[in-house]
Image (cartoon, rainbow, N blue to C red; front, side, top):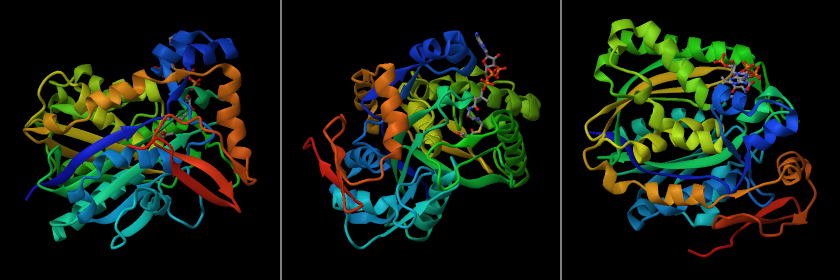
Length: 389
Ligand code: CAA
């Protein structure tokens, strides 16, 4: 019986910083960002947004009565957690009034966490087909101000329902894996910005891709000539191009039919949002489904997930025949089109000063989404539904 993704929605903040402004601020040719890195804008959370509010805004549209009643497990993947102990998923559980009879847990392995979630969810549902699993990935990608990583920053969340007989994509059981203990990107507990060895991270990403794909083939996974589209973890869209080049070279004639068109539609949202770490691959998948002009029903997608540190996984999925009926493409486009551009000072204050605030505070309304962080009271985060449905 088919198991896979039954529903998907994304959320990204209502404000962005234009990379042309970042280039001007740093005296850099803007083409380095738009062409060399392949990014146009970075989504910037307002002070009253965090990984929980982005997650709640992504999950809310998925909560039909049928989903509420059947969710047995909530998996929240993030590498920008707000608490060392409590799962961010429990805040979402509370804000959205999910049923008490379910388990809620947070997964962390850099940008890879949501893929672990998807695989565990598929196996849970294969065991107990009546249950549904809610996977949430939500992250704020932050580097040092003025560092080379700054242009790849972003923020966003994706929410997915994994079920039997999924309406969107069936995930195949085979997957190829590659793990390596390496310091290419990391964030010690006392830091809000990641540390990164950029060139090393690209090398390890590409090695993980070819090694995970080789493992996938050894285990009987589909050859690339049976794959129609590709979707790569996308810290910046140029990385997908590098990934495609490495995979095509490793696969040789199997990949001869695949070109830039096989992954271009997966880049549309990422180019406007920036890196979203654990959410990035699945925002890419949503971008592919939402933006591909041809009907993908019955087509096969190859997906590569990478989390620095590092874990890589290659797997495949088949798009279900009627998937188009269940997409939220219009809502996603409307959300991205409605965003407001930030000036340099507001971007710098929101992105770099807000994470330093640890004291109790009330937060004025800035967020564009339905759910927001209203205050921190006695070190407790207080969320509210600011814009009723
Ligand atoms: N016009 C057009 N292109 C230009 C240009 C110009 N004026 N100036 C430079 N470029 C091109 C360069 O030729 C280069 O292209 P190629 O990569 O195709 O060679 C590209 O722009 C980038 O230039 P640099 O290599 O000089 O870039 P950089 O040293 O400033 O840093 C980076 C790039 C390492 C990716 C940096 O942004 C970074 O550290 N990013 C964060 C880490 C990251 O995202 N790593 C990816 C793999 S790890 C991962 O995937 C996990 C994760 O999410 C973090």
